Each structure stands twice: as structure tokens, then as C-alpha cells.
Image 1 (cartoon, rainbow, N blue to C red):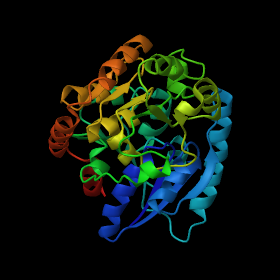
Image 2 (cartoon, helix red, strand yellow):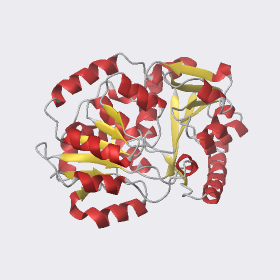
Image 3 (cartoon, one colour):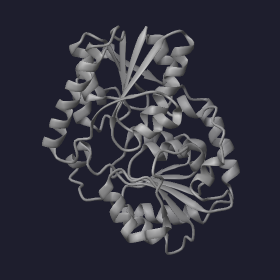
Image 4 (spheres, rainbow, N blue to C red):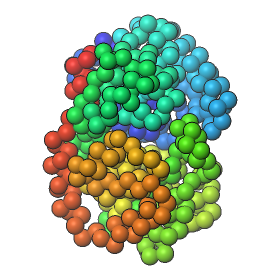
Length: 352
């Protein structure tokens, strides 16, 4: 079979690469497409995997999202339609454009999703999918209201990160790339997805709240912050305020190893906090509402802290950066927890 993967966020290259490696072992052919956004393209370079790039992010306006999506549908449709052999399956993490193309060209879709709060992309992808693969920590009712049917639902008892973290071993080489050493103290940070439709629905705008959090952290933290801004405007604002206290990688790096050697990970989203916590590094998500998977991860003992306000995030961050003595035991405990969780890979391989 030929499996087509489309990636639209920086989380997906790691997940889909891990899945593709398993499928390729079984003799399947894979192909990858993505959009030009964030660190996605350089992540594929880091993974040494070929990818075709089509389209870009539409920005914060609804009109911009609509027009960028329409253009990307056209580009993807032309590419897939002109292939020598049509893909047998399409897999994405709720990519509206590629899911529409797959549906239009008669290619069945497996959608992976852990974010029912992103209602717009859910409504545009879930109803068009043959299967929806998701963590069982998310109530099925959250998918039914987005248009899912019972026969589409394919829950698994774990989290996505198991797919690429179960056999993780840190590599200190990433530190030298950023002029750091294993003795240095630093935090990994990422602003919120301020232009996402689900953030706009919450009435949350602006560049980022991360500057307010870092401002307080730096009052008692002498280390640096390795920053992964989502947009150029966020980068400019944060650099202007904090200058050389920030290290901003110009392209994708081995973030998994970076988490391992850091004191803390803090993000306004979910992915980095989840990854870092699953490695055993204390992590904070300051997303302003409870998210099912984040709550689940925290409840089973993985060191992820969900703080819904700026003040709560600041208070938690100060506690964590002043309490790093138990890092080794936390890592070991987390590794044991991760080994008990199911990976989405097995579920998808069985569906194919």
C-alpha cells in the first residue's frame, strides 16, 4: 500500500515518522506533504525524510485562513492527482486541506486527533474520515458533537508521545549546537498558538502572555531560556524584551534531548509540555482551559502541571526551578509509567 501523510504542525513529523518507519518495515510505501509553517520543514530535514511542501499558514484572520486553505487544497489536489499511483490511505492530524483532497479523490482517511477543543478543524476533518484514532482519555461525546459516527471511533489507552518516546535516549550534541553545556541551567519555552482559530474563539488575542511569565521567572532564575516562537511577531517582541537571555534556534533541533537537559519546560500550548513531561522534565502548560489529555497525563503521575492563568504559571514555575534535586527519580518513575501506556501506532497498523 501507499500511505500519504500530511503534516501541518510541528508535532506531527515525529509522530508520523515513527509510524512510517513501522509501515515501511511491513513493505508499505510512504509519502509526505506539509505546509511551510513554524519548524515543520526543518524537522523533516532533521529526520532525514523527504517531504513536499505545499501552501502556508493563513495567519490570524478568518479570511486569511480560508484563502490559504483554498490555495493549499488546489496545490495538494494537483500533486496527488498527478502521481503515478494514487495513495491507498491518507493519514493526518486533522489537516482540513489534505482531508478534503483525499475525500474528493476517493482516498480513505485515518485522522489522528487529541484536540476536540479545536472545533473548526475537527468539523472539517472528522466527518470526512474513515477512522478517528484518539486517546481514550477523551470522552467520545467530544467527537460526536463534531460530527463523528460511532463506527469511526478508534480509541487507544495511551498518549501520542508513546509512539516516539518509549525508547528515547538523550544526545548532548544538541547543547553544543546552542552554545550550552550539560552544566548550564536553562528553560525550554514556547508561546501560545495566538493565531489559532480555537484561541480566537476564546477571545484571546495579542502576541503572547509568555513575556509576563518570563519577566517574573528571571527575577530569581539566572539561567537562559531556549525559545521556540510560533510567529515572527512573537519572536520580535520577546527578543526586544529579554535580549541575550533568550536562545532562539534558527531551525529545528533535537528538542527531546533539549528537554532532558533542561530545568523546566513551559508553553502556552500542549505538545512541548507533554513531550518534556513524558521524558520526566517538569513541565507547565498555561493553556487557559482544561484539556482532557493534559489532565489525564497529570493525573497518572507524569510531571505535567496545568496552570490556567499567568499568575498560577508564575507561581508553579518558581516552585519547580527551585526544586530540581529529585530529577533522577522523577525520570525513572515517568519512564515506568510510559511503558504501561498504549501507542497509537499499533492501532493504526491494525486498521490498515
